[in-house]
Image 1 (cartoon, rainbow, N blue to C red):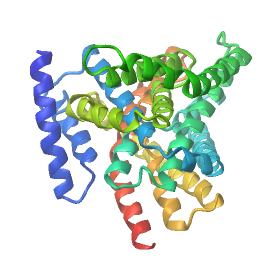
Image 2: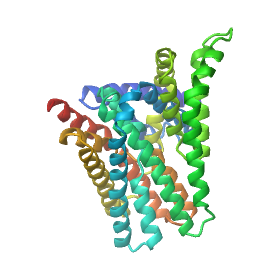
Image 3: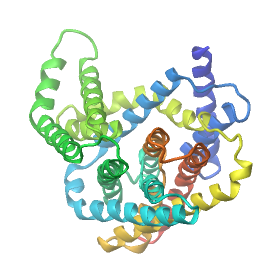
Image 4: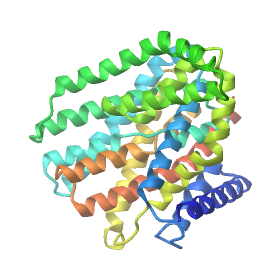
Length: 379
């Protein structure tokens, strides 16, 4: 059954992506929407399974790995201030307004802060594809967005650890911080010394496709240890791409990993987001979903855009950066699952949040198309 479902997903995703481009939108929007059509919410041709979820995760990892390979290291270094302002601006504003929404909904103080934290999460794996299609991935704005995603991810996880300790969970805040510091230090050191050495040694083996195999090994190891350290796997994959981008193997790895990724794993990732959408029982909570969706979109957009403007970007580029930070994606879904387990989210609120995450994910590509086109026309 999985084989047939993969065939359906690949065919539908490519056709829907092409149709989306013809309508003037990024192809990723069509791939997201076709997932909803294929999934249980509409036709039920494709069901959410553990295997499909694993393939989807590989797609997200490879997408961020490619983003790392395409990142200009020098430009990335130059956008440190912008990335910090964008990341923190796009986190603080959603957290505050999310907390206020929780108070308005008569949630407890801890539940309200958790809702704010949930809305402050960012996942730019969707934005990366839109940036590629808009030729903005290698730009100064693209570098700032990717850097901000790393900062946002780390800040949200640390804030979560602090909140869970306040909730009485067995969380050692200092240990969590040290674990993340150790990961980033090891990742940077390995990228400087170990990655080039491993690529040279492994690629000399007398078998076929050793360069791409060695690169994928590095990517998956980075992703695994990132997740083990409490950092999102996609951040580890992005750092692996950055490490390889400084070597002479960059172009060969990029060409081959892009072929592998976009032929199967990335389309599955985009479509599976729509497949996993659950719309049952949302009618009675429609008002709440609309309220949280508006808060989620506007606060992230305005907060990140304000951070970009304060760091020196012009108004139109700042709006483009703000739009790219709107998508919550898998990071917010992971936090939602933690909220259910720790009783910081009710089942009804969890169902609403899942729909809100989907809304933010679907609106991000067209928002980026609009604002980056405006920025380009203003140059």
